[in-house]
Length: 231
Ligand code: DC
Image (tube, rainbow, N blue to C red; front, side, top):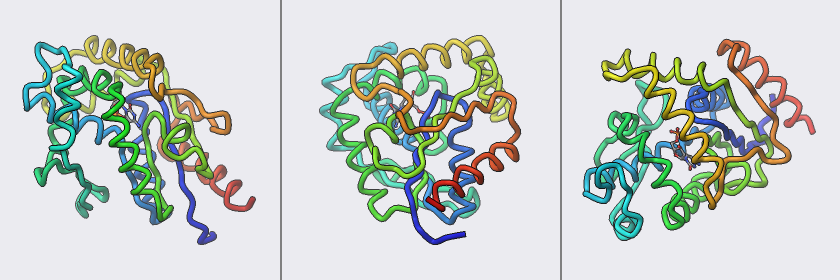
């Protein structure tokens, strides 16, 4: 089409397929895909494994003190066609999407020092442009100047069913009800937290994919991308 490299910011609710969509777009355009939720999950996993979360209660000061010991990097994994996340050189991709991490990640991601560190890393990763980044605050805080901003959502029931299928197929023993509760409580926590709450940027376009196939979403994306690139 055109070789102008832009920043594509995808924000929205949890479990509505943002990462799958962002990954497909990045592959189509030859862009780098960055899953910022994985970064908040990696910090949460580290905090869980290093005793800063007791019976589900996140000790903010302890997490903050640990931050300088946490080095996050992404390494491309050709078999997945996406990057895996590493913490201090350890591959943690397979450990960050458990229900334990999901239940604590909203509290960890509401700590100012955690956001400061991760936002700075994300801005550095997008410096050369040509990135598709998904999260909660990409179009509002990380890259307010992004050329294309998409705000994704889907009905909570539909999202819970998708995540339930994904986890049970992996062998996790979870119930649909606990996943549903996690989806609803994370929406609330993400949208009401004091720092960088999830909200639709004024210039973002909404994609509600409750009843859309992946192909329909890609066709919708092509239209939006062509519009932006021809401006
Ligand atoms: O996209 P996800 O569900 O894997 O994200 C996990 C959590 O991380 C989510 O509940 C909120 C937080 N998050 C955030 O605060 N800011 C981002 N840019 C991405 C994720």
